[in-house]
Image 1 (tube, rainbow, N blue to C red):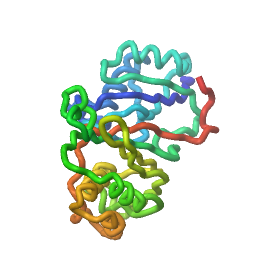
Image 2 (spheres, rainbow, N blue to C red; image 1 turned 60 degrees about the horizontal axis):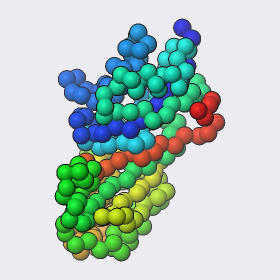
Image 3 (cartoon, rainbow, N blue to C red; image 1 turned 180 degrees about the horizontal axis):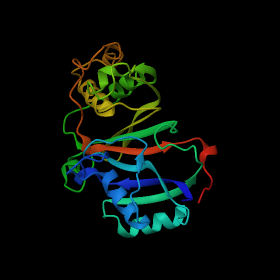
Image 4 (tube, rainbow, N blue to C red; image 1 turned 45 degrees about the horizontal axis):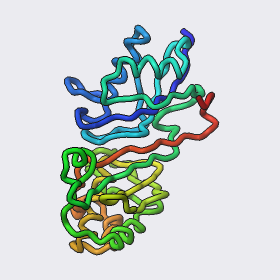
Length: 258
C-alpha cells in the first residue's frame, strides 16, 4: 500500500492523561491519537512522539509522526482527526515529511516552559491548574544566575530519575537556552536542548526555586552537574505547570509548509 509520512503538531492538556506513552489500562496521549488515526484509516496505525511527557505535563508544540495511506493529505488528516479527538487534544498543524523523517531521532531541539505564579491570584482555580502557585519570596537575580550554569553540554545524571535511561547512556544533553523571565503575575523558566531526561526540567526548577528562596546558592547547579546521581538534588517541581512548547527538525525533511 502506498503511504505517506505525516508530522502532527499538537496541543494537549495533560491533566487527564497518564503521560504520553501508551500504557495498558491507562488513558494516554499516544493511545488517544492512535485510536483516532486508526479509526480514520481503517487499520492500526502507530503514532510515534518526539519524546515522552510525564503525567500532568501539557503541550503546545508536541510533535508526532504517523504513516498513513496516501489518500490522506496532511491537511485532511488534521481536519478529520480534530473532528473526532477528545476536547483535551488538538492538532494545531500537520506536515507531509520525507521518508527518512523520524519524530524522535530527527529532532534537533526541544523547548519547554515552566510557569510559576507569584501573585495572590495564582491560587485561583483558573490559574493554579497551569502554573505553580508560589507564595514564598523569590529572588529573580538568584534564579537567573543559577540558570546560567545549565547552558552548554553537561551530564544531567543528577537531574534525572535513576533508571529511566540505560546506565551506558552518558546522560549528556546540550542546553542552548536556559533563562527566567518575568510575566504578569509571575515568572517563566524557558529551556531548550537537544534532548531531555525524565523529570530533568522539573528537578532543575525545583532546585532553582530553592536557590531563589536563599536555601541554596546559585553555584549548586554547577556542583550538582558533577554528581553521579540525584541524591543531592531538590525535589522536582510539580508537573502541572510544565509545557512542551516546540520541537524543531531540519527544514529539508519537510515536503510542504501548509
